[in-house]
Image (tube, rainbow, N blue to C red; front, side, top):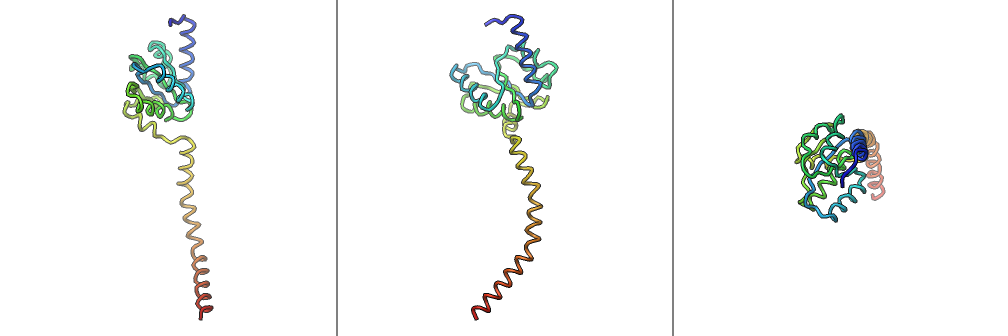
Length: 175
């Protein structure tokens, strides 16, 4: 379907706005995917809060200009679908990676994180990044470990004294 000039400007503006607010992006070649497969991919992206869009490469190049994803412009060749993570850096990579495992016709071409172009094989590393909640809980666990260890260490002499007194009482009671 041919777009008029106003529609093209709207698409460029929309993609540029999303790219400006996204920490990571993935471009994957989708040629050979059926309509049902594309619908399934779009649904899983929607469920994960991912912006997923098929955009003409010339419009995508214009949209990514002056954003942190300017590094992707050179690689926008072929039938590509763009996926932008809105909150979590690894969310788009996780959705694309998981779908590509099920369907070999989806081929990852470009991966970018915070304005840096990564190798397509780095999608696994990006997809395995913890979510914000997971990262916070991991950090809290690391921060709490020394405190918990100190509390156990400080409580141990008293606990040992109580166990010793109990053992002596049991011994005297048994005799």
